[in-house]
Length: 234
Image (cartoon, rainbow, N blue to C red):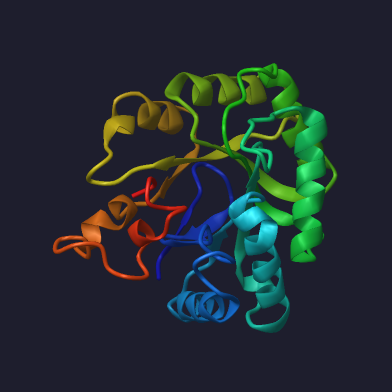
């Protein structure tokens, strides 16, 4: 599998990434292990998770597999924070740094390669939110930082703030839903990401499974649409 730099950073990632949103809920540990091994065998390196996936269970499964199944040094481990277990957005410095420490504990890691703000929190000043990114990099808990599900102006503002003062951690990535069915980010978000020198990490590039064709004749058993907790997602 080919690799590329994430934006204008020095971080090399595989062209395809492995998401773990269903791990610990619809994907059991054995299935997760099979997915990860197949991904690594194909040359994949970027594995993306988040603290809220399956209430933290996805991170625990990933941590177990990094210890016992695959070589952690060959992977780019990415996680996210800014959503509380109750679904409330929280971009406060206090919550973010506690969430990162909890993620590291669940995965039994001393650092991740990419730490991302899962959502934009309008109730917290952006400069406070971004200060948590600086602290995470300075303390060695992450190597790089990025954002997720940000609007175009939010990406531009965050990237400009981080560039405004030497020593701040640059925003190297923006993770957004992007597929042939969801192309609305092309108008404003993609130009903002490119202008910021960040890399675009599309999530659900197969249109939440619709583009696989598996829903043409109905909802197959075991699909996300068949699961009550994911039915609205599809």
